[in-house]
Image 1 (spheres, one colour):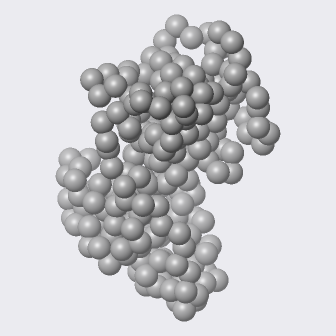
Image 2 (image 1 turned 120 degrees about the vertical axis):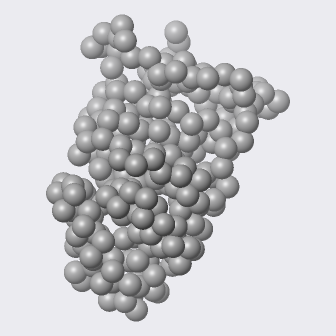
Length: 239
């Protein structure tokens, strides 16, 4: 696949988060001139068409996605929606935007992380860049899950260990999908508030580079990939 200008991708995502659908269409169309079969750009373009009321173009775009990836759940879901929706209904649905600032990197405040123990491709295929996901604290790790509690992956051990302590002390975080591929999930984690104990301490050291490591883990160390649905109170377990 041809190399795609990363700034184009980032700008396309910011346009979508800002609900600037005209700009999202322009940027994703530009990306597709570089890589005509880029699934992420096609899904973003289809959604921008859908949200701007261009039903025929949205349908055509999602049908192309399915011709390239017949199990793509984003395309399947939106084609079903397009079968029943009317243009006036789509234009009336403003939705809620995620601030583009959520997606921008800030030293000490944000960190882009490669997840480990990635979920099967069927689960990842439902994701798109810019989508908000949840951080779920477990005994010794932090899982990444959708708002429907579908398991997507886990944070590396060193980041999990640090965040578990900070969350226990009152820090709060949000996470969004930075990029997703068949066997890769990158998330951007943003610190949104600090507890009193670490009020003057940024979450992420600007000079630290976190590297996922999964080798040497036993089966019992791997996260539970089944949806639970309940809030587990094991984040405060002692080492």
